[in-house]
Length: 453
Image 1 (spheres, rainbow, N blue to C red):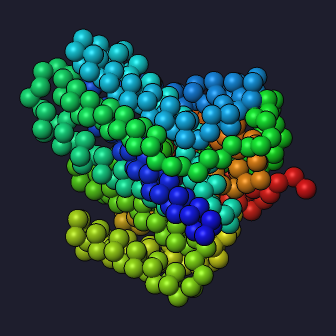
Image 2: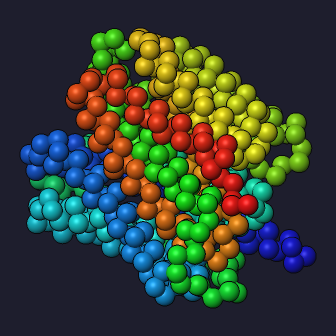
Image 3: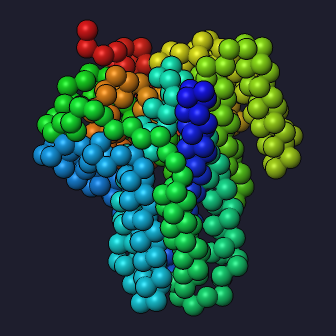
């Protein structure tokens, strides 16, 4: 009976957390809408407008670094407070960040907007540090990757819906607002959502995981090989994924690739992110503890068919056919991965290396679809790297989590390197940069994930 009630409370905790993952996926991609909006409102150049991403991603690095320093000096804060209080604190800081958009628009100061984004990013940092490992430990270690993939699937749902909803609110619904006023109401609503979530989680009975050992100060987490190599893997993964997404519209506009206008190219960007969401839901089933093999296969085929239909109905049936072929390849890769997190990780990394080589050595549709299909194979990487990195870390789990979140810095650095290559050697050739990301991730899946003997 006790086991049953534990399972029940774990399930309700997991459901509350998936909404969290959805919200921060939604808010992160909303920055892509903010950039062109603030660029026009403040008459900025491209570099100034890109400070939006810099302010947001820098907060992850600064927030995680502060967290890590505190944990070294006086022991892990979340170990002392518990994950629940950590998540509530993250939601409150996120709400403050969203509320700051109101005075930023009122005074029409660009620097104020960047400050608001930085505070929002700090809130998300706390959420990532607390929620990722919390989802991983809400059940058996064997199915940790499955749970994190499912939660990340809802994160991807947020990233897929944000451009549509955010674009409508900011560019259509509030478009007649003066200056930078169009963001006032949307971000005020987001602040209320964060505060409501904080209250909801406060009164939701979440299982409490604090370690009986004291929250030990010092650099304990860094003694674990799987974590140190995992930090570089997260840096490479986020850097590679963000680089590809950022360069894709320019890439699809190249005459030798497709010569697409920005509005037409954005359809393929949506397929890229939608593929990532599909792969995460497939990963949640594939890496789960489900005993019935036939049911598992049926569910995965069902998800693949549904995704193909959505691509067909929302873009074209020609796109759906090609996407469907890549989905078949994705399913084969999952079956070859045999529901083992590290094995699935290196197979997916190898497939992405092949896709990048095809894109670099070809033009036209072959090159176009090789890049778009990478979303499907990026899907499980964050969750699998994260869970492999924190496996067996015990009392150092949240210190390790802060170090992994710090490595989201890859999303600020690798796109700049890719941009430099694009300026020097052309956009097509710049796709050589993510190749190095996936070579490293393949190494991590084969060997880097192993703890010291």
